[in-house]
Length: 338
View 1: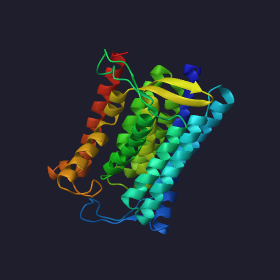
View 2: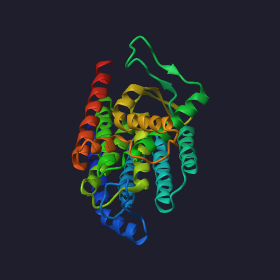
View 3: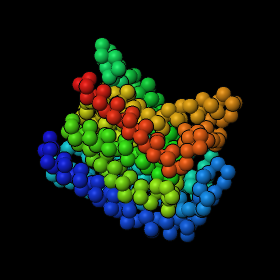
């Protein structure tokens, strides 16, 4: 068991280091984006008036990877906890980032992109980062956890991770929107991790939070750099992973494989409410119009707000408020039910 003071120190170092490194590397990422043609060109659907580099994900992955790696080394040297989970997250984060980077450069079609995301999600499942059982007591006190059959655990985990990746990617339509939602969600899980002394979600949440803090000044309206698909895939993937680890009540170690039980689906949904509800309604809207769920249009929540005459900055701030509101509700109800 890691002492509370050590948790605070590790958390603060992680947040500061991730934020500092991410912010420091942004000018380099911007130049790389310009030099290698990773440029976002304005069109009818987009609300940007000028072309911007979309290589901001390079800064995000750099700040995150370095801070997480240092935390892994610390845990390995000074505690008895396994680091396999964090190493898996780090490696898979790099893989999902690379997929996004290729998509930014060459525009991968939806189905191959989804297959790649499913494959990485399957790797996560095989390493114990999976939804083994769902705890419904959050909303139904008389109903205990429901243990999932292996095949159902596999499918639900893949759908959850892949769905969250794309939900956050779809929210990256206005300056600062996706990274702001990530910041709020990561902070919520960070607070929960402190209270329940959860080392793994604390480390992951603090790295994501620090990276988001370092990136948001350059991405908030009017943005100087965009995160691109490489950045939004990376952040969405880590929010999905954080939700599995941070919304689970029990950690089980079996033959060096750590897994997580009692996944509190209501807490996870509340903390990611805006991206998930946006994705649900967008998909339904497109299917009702007999269009592909991947067909780009202006049916997202931020497009709706703009259509009401609310400007970009106000729309983003309003979504921030809603995200924070639902996070507080989920967070409060979770602890009231304990």
